[in-house]
Each structure stands twice: as C-alpha cells, then as structure tokens.
Length: 262
Length: 213
Image 1 (cartoon, chains in turn brown, green):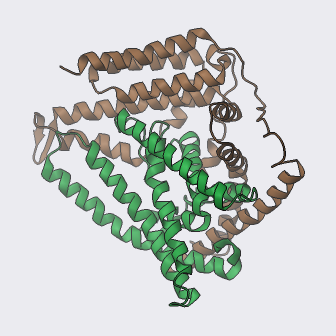
Image 2: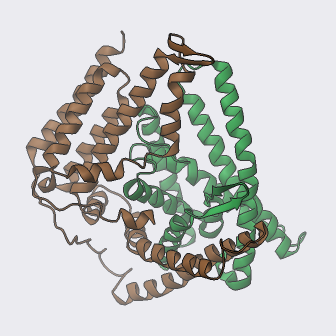
Image 3: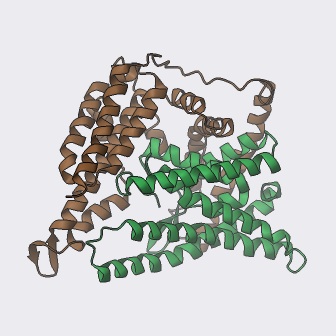
C-alpha cells in the first residue's frame, strides 16, 4: 500500500541543505512555505520557482524523488485547477458551445497550481534532507509538548507494522472469498466491519505490550528520552542557507506588498 | 477531505495554526486532568496508526465505493486523545502520502479534529441516557450520531472554507449550484459513516467492550 511505498522519505547526502542544522532549517523552510502561500500575483511566480528550483538543486536530491511524489496532489486540487478556467471570470478567451475559457479563472488556476508545486517541492526538500527523528527532536526543542512527540514517534514506528498486518488480513479475507464470490452488500459490510474491528483490536492489544516494554525501559520516570537518528545530520547552523532562505521569503512578502495596490 | 498546499491564502493557514494551537492546549489540559495514565499514550498512538491505515478501506455502495473518514469513531474511542491522534495522522499523511499539506496542517486539523472531539463528547452522552434506553440501544444511537457528526461537521467546515476562499470572479449562480451538488452528495456519506461506526461499535462491544469505555 501507499504507506509502504513512501517510507523512504529521507535521502542521505552531503549537500549544504543536508548539513544544515535541523532547527533553523525547519523554521526557515516553513517561513518560505508560508511566504509562498502569501503570493497572490502571477508576476511573482517565476521568482518563486527560481528560488524553489535553486533550493532543490542545492539539496542535490534526485529528480526521481520529486517526480515519484508529485502524482499524489489529491483530487481536490486537480478538480479546482481543472474547473476554474471554465467557471470563473468574465473575459472569455475561447468559446465552443457551452464551454468558455476565461482569463481570470485561468490566472487563478495557474496561481494555485504554481503555489501548490512550489510549497510541495519546498516540503520535499525539508523531508528529503532531514531524518524524521531529527525533525521530531527539533520540534520538541521548539516547545512541542512531549506527549505529541512521543505519540508521533510511536505512531510512525508502528504505522508500517500495522499497515503490513492490514495487508495480510485483507489478503486472508480475499482468500476466503471476499470480492471473488457474489455477496450481498450487507455481507460485504460485515466482512469490512470485522476487518477494521480486528485491526483496532490487534493494535490495542499490541499497545499494552508496547507500554509494558516502555515501562521496563524507564518510560514515565526521570528525564524524557532523546530521539537518536540513525542518520545523524550535521549540527552546523549554516548562515548562508538560513540567510538566503529568509531573504527569499522576505522578498516574496515585500513583492506582494508593493504589487497589492496595483 | 484534505485541503492541499497552495489553495488557501496565508492568513487562513496562519489562523488554522492558531486555532489548532489553542485546541491542542485545551486537549492536552483535559488529557492531563482526566487521563494522566501513561498507558494511554501507546494506546492512542497505535490506534491512531490503525485509523490511518484503516481509512484506506473503501466501502462498497454499488455502483460506486466510498472511503471512510472515521473521525467520529476516533472521537468515540479516544475521546480527548482523538485530537493529537488526528494532528499526527494528518502530519504523517502530508509527509508520507502528500495528502493535505504542511501549510494547511492547522486548517485540516481543525476541520477533522474539532468534529472528532465533539463526536467523542456526544458518544459519552449515552451514559446519561442509560436509564431511559437499554445500553445496546444507546450504544447504537450514539455511535451512529457520533459517526455522522464527525463526517457531517467536517464537510460543513470544508464547504465554509471553500466558499470563504473562492475567487471573487466566480459566477454566483454556478458557485451556488456546485456547492449545492457537493452538499447533497455528502448527505448519503454522513448516513453511511454513521451506520458503519454503529456496526463497528457493536463488533467491539461483542469482542472487546473495554475499548468502548
């Protein structure tokens, strides 16, 4: 299933973005993403793309990494970008029967698609160059409550395990005839209720064992554990990427500010 | 029902994070006050993972099939822990699957998490009606309502956001028709989610009633 396919979110490397300390990287790239979300003028999009493409090249992530993840934008954005040029606006560019391509809708669709691609690519740079555990550690050092970081770590740790159990259970269900022999809808629902119910039950029982193991290792007593990544990222607070990314983010905001009265 | 990056303006995304921060504070306060047992953490985390995986299940409604949201069920089983579970689930979905987004994480969390919390509170009302109704009937009614409320309220917030952020160049008549069609299409989903939640609660009552406490 999809969860398993994209488990390899971190790509080890030696680029400056990889060696950039996690905390300033997280803050800088989130600021950049928010600055991109603020862009409302198409004229700024080429500059946004120049920055994002430059960042991606600097990170030395392979192009296949980006291309593999881009086909998951969700139906909503596809529908929105696909429908807007035909439904929104007054200036008709081309017309055939009841279909009319409108300038304003086309501009809005281009803006949404552009912002989406730019933010998504920035997010991939963040996730592709930073181990997940380093991200969690940085979030905890930024004040994220320990309960949230503990829960995130446990959910992430057991997600793939539970996904594998789910795949096995579905396969067993199919081998017993689900989807192959003709069944009423109510019977199919019965199978699915039992499938999801059993998955919840197994997870619950596993959580009892996990808790006992955690207690034996000292969970709930003394100082909270540090998350140690198997891919320790560099601890350098590189001034260059931090400065450049904040400069780019500020330039988007300033550009938007000057263009707004137009 | 995830809003991806790039659609919402930055102030809406920031407002989403601010509201999500406030709800996180309130939920953690309730968790520390009512269920301070550390055993709840792995239980909530693993059930969150199971919900994450289980939401890929498609329910056959000939001639189509629909995906479940399970937010109402999450609220019913996890109560206040449903909020961190949804927040984490959405973060992992954005990271691993590219569903939703990092700038819209706050908005998406409010959209799915607040209905889950309300559904959880609604589900707990069944104890108050234990004298008027049999426990089994109360479980059926309130689990149905919790499931339906979870998806219904999420859909309402989603449409509210779409209307609020829709370009001003949109033709009002077209906008109204589209939104009406979307709303009408979601009514059966609300019913189906409620029904599935009730069936699942009956299943859990039979095999592991502890989970429904």
